[in-house]
Every structure is written in structure tokens, then in C-alpha cells.
Amino acid sequence: MKKLLSVFLSMLLVLSLCTPAFAAEGTGDIKVTVANDMHYSLAYSSAATVKKHNSISKDYSHISSTGKLNYESVAIFDAFMAAAAASDSDVILVPGDIVEAGTVDEHIAVAEKFAEFEQTTGKQIYVVPGNHDLFKTSTEEFYAVYYSFGYDKALEKDTNSLSYTVDLNDEYRLLAIDSTDPGNGPHGMTQARVDWIAQQCEKAKADGKYVIAMMHHSLLDHYSFLAEIHIGEAVNSDIALADTLADGGVKYIFTGHIHIQDILSYTSKGGATIYDVVTGSLTTYPCAYREVTFSDDVKFETKKIESIDYSDVASGISEKALALAKSDFQSYAYECARVGMRIVMASYIKGSSLVSLLKINKEENPELCALIERVGDRISEVAEMPLYAKDAAEGENSVEAIAAGFGKTIPDSEYKDLLDLLGVIYLAYQSGDEDYPAYTKEILIATRGVTAVFTYALEDVSAQDYAVVLKLLFDFLGVEVDAGLLEFTGSIVSIYEHLELVLTTAVIPMLTNISDDTAPADNNVILPGYGTPAEESLSIWEQILEFFRKIFNFIAGIFNIA
Image 1 (tube, helix red, strand yellow):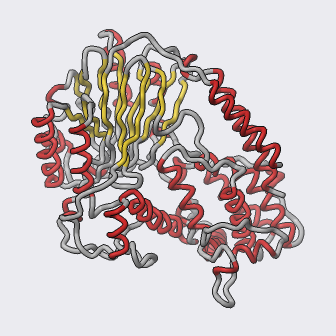
Image 2 (tube, rainbow, N blue to C red; image 1 turned 120 degrees about the vertical axis):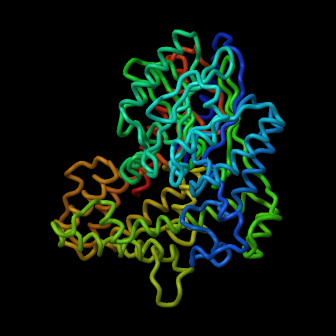
Image 3 (cartoon, rainbow, N blue to C red; image 1 turned 180 degrees about the vertical axis):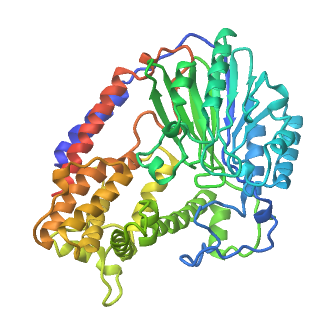
């Protein structure tokens, strides 16, 4: 197996070094800075002391389930504005969730800082609202407060939303799209807005302009079950917008909302390619923003907030956490995100949460509801159980011991439990350029560990209920599993073997969709400029690399069963 892995890795390395660079005809230059999901919070920044938000971490008890650095939001905002002022970017794009609570006072505080920035630097800021921005602020109030940051220079304004267009320079036009539904988290994109967008694309073509777009909600589904877990997060999952933009000549759209660093491409039925460039939250690990240069090609650079001024941040953060924050801000942000991610994952897998996520009607299906709650609570119990026997207290079970009962070993590691491991995998995805392919130790541990968890949770259910539970979960996640694989009869040992086969077949492709990045890269990458044909944007070498990656992960997944 190791020889096989070495051969494939060598082929991938050679092919990547051979990848040629393509350049388009000169189209003029413009450099933009993109900062998303700033979540500027007056309430947290003005607090005298931090509040305890969780009981799972002594040192990071001030962190909530979002993992956001709420108390540091204003200091982070100020650090970003200073960096943007020192950069050579021409304009600043802010695609929504500018503030946290969505109050008018928060917006006014931000607008005053924006105005000072523009006056001292001569650079223009353009904004569109995010869902947080309209929680307690009307669209009319948002428009009035941010009038000087795009709306006053607009060529066209949508009368039914806060969308507008504006020329960035002689060659590039910004299509600023309002994707919100005031007061709600899910997007508010309508067919009327899509029609307006199509009209603006046609006008830009007639005017000979290249169109760069931005909106708050992500355009595409950036991981396979985003639409199932977070309804209304990805616009194109509910209303067809990607084809309109791509066929309308929009090659790049800057989005956010889901707090990750990710670039995903989509090719329309007409053969046009658009890149959905999601930028993570400025106040959530890795506290990143982008600097993007549009020229013959498009150069993406990811920048991160590396330090902030803690003089005005609320007191009460533990000495250990504060010391780390001041010495290594990125590591501090990472630890905060790990705590937040653990809270979220633990809440999702509880029995009552699974019933809600799976949309089971308790009155119509009381027996099914009871079954799912029981299975979910047992899954929750094992997921937080020590991964290894060496970390278990006397008389306490472990995932390793459960797996050993079926003749399987959990590879040694420093992870304490499955939630710890899965959190690390997800945060790698959140920061972009994730690198946990199917053959890595982390995925092997996850596969065998999750198999042990499900075996424990399903060991006392009937064969019929076993199949029902798995089908519900896979249907919810949008994972297609052959009906034959879900059929089960036999002893408890065959449950484990059967589960391992099913999970390896169904879950590894879904997991590696998050854990293993595919082209293009998410952070520092050069992509085709406007005027480059779609066929050239993905070179033959990139297509070969993707082909071998998929074959390699499939083979590795099969070997994970052994």
C-alpha cells in the first residue's frame, strides 16, 4: 500500500510542477481588498468584563458556539482598516454582516470609521448588507447610513432591494447584489432580483465592461450537505442565479456568510465559468481577508490579522488565553474556534437535535421519533467519550475499546476524542487549502471511530430499524447509498463490518469533500483573467490532476476498510 501511495504522490507532484500558466490579453489593472463578516459589535466591545458563554473550557469560557472573537471585534476591525490603508489596493469591498447585532448605532459607528478611512486614504469602500445588518435596521436606514459607500455613485439601483452597480474604473464594473431577507438569516434572493441582475449584465456588455460581483450569501453549495443543514445559505440551491451571472459575463463573485476560505467554480449550461470566492469572517479564525489583483490574470492573496490592540478589550479573559492572544493571535483565534466548533458539533448530534434536523413529526411518528432520539443520545455519548483507553478514567469506556471488540484498531494520535478530531478537520477546511485526503491518519481514525460510534448506538436495534435510521441520515445528508448496502441481517459483529463498508462507501467521499481541497486553491492562487475562454481556465493538466486525485482517494478509501 505504501508503495502505491508513493507512486501516486510522485505522479501528482510531477504533474503539478508541469502545470503551465495561461495568460489573457491585457485588460487593465485594478486591485481590490475584500473583507467579509466583520461582525462589529458595540455591546461586546463596550463590556467591562467578559461573560461566561460555555462550561466546556476553563481557559476559553468566554467563547460562544460561533467561535467568533466578539470581544475583540472592534480591535480587529481597526487592525484591518490600518492594514487596508497601508496596502496598494484601489478599493475595499465589504459583502455584508458588517455589524453583529444589526443596530443603527453599530452601523453609524462603522460608517464614521469608513468615512475617515476614505478621507485619509482616498480609497473607496463599497458595501452590501448581510443578514446581521438588517436584524434591527430597516433597508431605508441602511441605505441612508451607507449612502456614501456605493449608493451615491451608483449607475443603477434596484428599486426592490439594496442592489446597485458602479464603475470601479474604465474597464471594471461592480455588481453589488443584495441577497438578504430583512430580519432573517436565509437568503432573500427572488426571481425579480435575478431578472434585474440579468439586465445589468446586458448593460455592462453593451458598455464594454467586465463585471465583478459581490453579495453576502454564498452563490454555490461549498460542501455537499450545506443546503440540507443550513437551509437558505447557498443561493443557487434555491433559485438559479449562477447561470445568469456566468452567462452574463461575470467570472468572479465575492461572497461570505458561511465563514470559510473557499473558491469553487461552476460552469453554466452555456459553457461559461464563474468562480464563487468565499472569504471567511474577519472575527473568526483565521481572521482573513483577501487582496485580489485583476490584470491579464487574477491574483489572489490571503492576508490575516496577526495582532490587535488589547488595551480596550474587556477584562476577564483567562491569563493563559490572554497571554497566547498577545503573543500569537492566530493560535489564540484557532483555540477559540475549536471551542466554538465543539459546542456546535455536540449540539447537532443530540437526539432532540437530530429529530429537528431530520424534520420528523413527533405526533405523526412517535415511535420513529423515540428511536432517533435514543440513537442520537448514544451517538452523542460515544462522540465525547475518550478516543483512547489511556485517556479514559477507571471504569470508563473508550472508542478504542469499542473498536477493539470487533478486531479493529484506532491508529495512535494526540486527539482526545472524536469531536476534537472532527473539529480539527473542519477548521482546516474553514481556513482553506485543507489537506486531509482519504489516505491520511485523520480520515482513517474518523472512519473507524465513527463506525464504532454507530455500532454502539445501533447495537440493540432491530435489522429493520437499523436500515431506517441509516437511510434517514443518508437521505438528509444528500448521500446516495445503494439499497443493497443498507440491508442487514446477522450478529453484532456483522453490524460493525457492515457499517464500516457502508460508511467507507458513503461517508468518506462526503468527508473528503470537506477535508481535501480540490482545484482551484482557496488562498493564494492565480486564476484566469477576464477575456480568457472558459476552456482555457481549467488546463488539461489540472483536469488530469483532479482525475488522479479522485482515483487515488477511492483506492485509499477501500484500503481504509482493512
